[in-house]
Length: 66
Image (tube, rainbow, N blue to C red; front, side, top):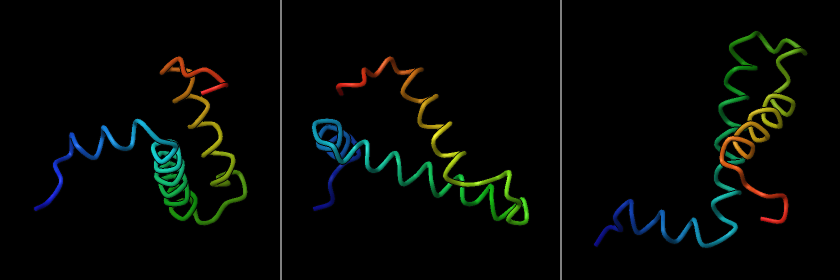
């Protein structure tokens, strides 16, 4: 029996695993940008990840305490 996407979402949203999953996915995307940019220093994946995560948290109105 395979879990449905809705079941996985309910589990992830109720635990810190959602934030960890989002962080890892954003970093992987930022690293892909870094690699595509020829490993240029201005395309630092950590800096891109931080900017993207700040944007996501701001757009979703997630509080710092959360």
